[in-house]
Length: 91
Image (cartoon, rainbow, N blue to C red):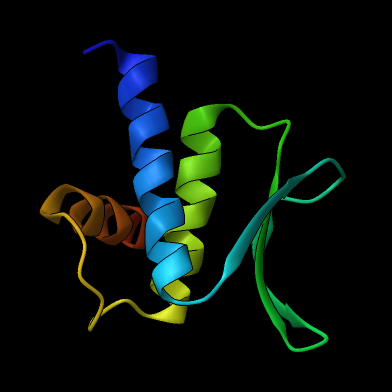
């Protein structure tokens, strides 16, 4: 499998985890990195769409790590990616 395809699949897996937590994921342009928020009772994770795929996946994984995914079912590779990104963000 090509690297870009694997990155796209990881991003899609992360989006599915967000859906299971009832968060909408928005990719928007702007001068920001991204993160989770609640806007008018809507749970959102906003990510800068100008970022490359790997950066978008990283931001999404860190947002999920901050929200907490302990009780959420996901593929082991996705959980590992979230844990790695959380470790990177605290290092």
